[in-house]
Image 1 (cartoon, rainbow, N blue to C red):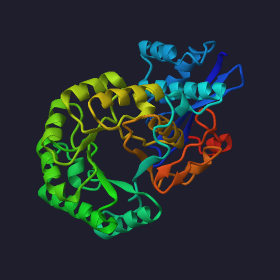
Image 2 (tube, rainbow, N blue to C red):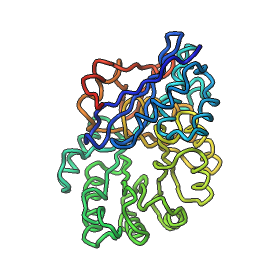
Image 3 (spheres, rainbow, N blue to C red):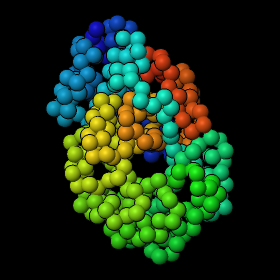
Length: 366
């Protein structure tokens, strides 16, 4: 079997033009087409990277996944581009062997992939009653875990110096309290700071929110200083989750050695693909660190991530975008199966889904 073409399809995502979705298809002379997805931004050059890297792969055996991954890394190809291509290669391998990808990764440890709803609050003003109502609606829809942004809606989250004011800290606590009271103690709740705050503010944030039994505080400060993040992780009562910006197991090695995270969240669509996520999770297991993959783009990455999660012993929970674009379920030949807050994977070969090219053309971002 040989690769005959690598194609990329940019599709409009939420907050367009901020977040396009980049779908990758790898074609073969056996008639098998593999599907993947890369995480990128409008001006990131991801589509060009995928096209240029793909041209070098024509004529190669798509089942030699590790070799191709190493070649692309050594060529300096953008890691997000590699991630999308690599995922498509696993899809080809699964289809060629007539088994789902999770079987190739060791089989299912988890038959149901628990998710948390990111963006449950979309469409609400940053006031307690509206966030609480949105949280209740998400729980009534079957979700058992929620995540809310705490930096975007406040002035401190956009300040250059990263200082969280006392007024914003009180508002943040009030917002978290309103959601916690609305959904009760049995629903997991976590917050995301997107690296917006400085070290003292990160520590104050934990102190203010300790009573609300959060699942985690995500990126309370920037990851560009692992020692600072490690101090927060050490002193914080609430678990610290980070890692969405890190690429490959080599970057995560430094994170583990610094003990800078209680929970990690690698993103399959930018960290290196399916096998790299699996390797990162295996490394995390040696430190007894659970894995909660980051997942902010399209449905292909969601399904690919779920395959890895299914075969990963230390999987904790997977991010799921609630309130995404209206056409999200049109992009694949079969919509994501979500049941009571869990993803259910089929036993179809490979990823088990195909692109709906009519919808891809309709919502094209090219």
